[in-house]
Amino acid sequence: MKEAILIDGYWTVDSNKWDEKIFTKEQSEINATTLINCSDCSDCNNCNYCSYCNNCSDCINCYNCNNCSYCIDCIDCSDCSYCSDFKTNPERITSSKIGSRDSQSTYYWNEDHEMIICGCFNGTLKEFENKVKETHQGNEHEIAYMNWINKIKAYKS
Image (cartoon, rainbow, N blue to C red; front, top):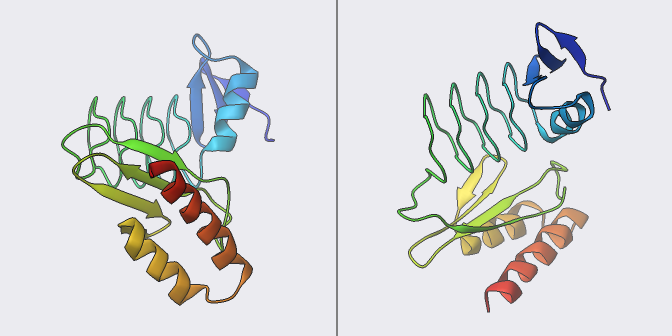
């Protein structure tokens, strides 16, 4: 775990930072481990491939967003949640680090819509299952992804 350094009132790890008035050094270091390829973000956690975001959580590929949660591919959003093709907030299940990317994947659903996000893949559970079988036929990644898919199916039934 990388050590947070106090710079201008923010605990800083790489180019990401956490307000020292809100977060302890230890909390900042833990939050830093939840960011995957994020840069110049403030007070964020559990995000992937985001830049210049503030106080966001569980976002993917976002840019310059504020106070968002569970968003995907957003630009310049503010105070939004789940803004990826859902009219109402979906439930979600997130995997452990699995597959060829050794990263988390998330399945979102509600009564109207479903979506799974896994790296650059974005589609339905059935589409994801087909893609896993096509891409990872017979290897350990197929087994890991299929175990997770089966857990989702069992949970929803």
